[in-house]
Length: 303
Image (cartoon, rainbow, N blue to C red; front, top):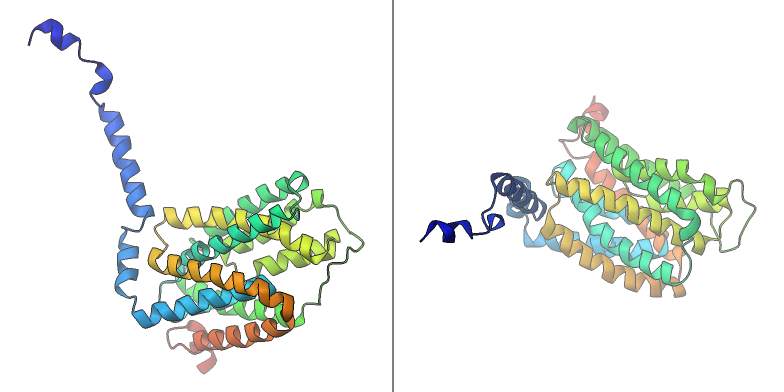
């Protein structure tokens, strides 16, 4: 080949060292995100068929009660913890499976005109920032402290569901406008990133009690805020390799199915049937978690 022919070879056809380094890093991120990390391989090995069926049922139940009374995480978090999965993997997997149902619900409420996008976007941004802070904090707390905190948070959420007042679709006198809601949305988003169960109900109650929204409109805006905090949390947990994808996909599909049935049940029976069931099941799972010999709280109670 003559020197002239060699000179005609385009330079961009020869990949640079910097490009190859960036490509290698991108491939590592993708491999980690789709579950090729050691955390995912460990979770895949410990999944039994019976465990997967149990978690699928929890995902279905969570979608069912979320569509009627809210608080599906009160079922999924203790159910995931009952399998013996690491705490961080539990939180990441729970976020991944619940975000599917939240996306579908947000889309449906938005189509129904129950999301106030024009005035809600500052609260949406605040919710995302708060969720990032919650995920950041949960990764900097010792595992023993998390094992102590989660049962306490679960019991607090259950008490909230027991004591919370009944809400209706009637508009009421507002104490603050929706434009002043971002600080509250940030705090709720922080809780969602840190833990999660009951977030939707807390947010809906705040919109009804403080902004004066009816329950349906408050729920629609809540779903939009939850979608933001869930998305931010899921991205960060995925980046850390803390999502068991097999479990998240199975639970997510069952969550959608449960939500579809729940919307139909809500038309007939409403929250008066599902809410007591939610409390009983989640309380039983939380007590099982407290009685686990590996839980530090049991050691404190025995002493």
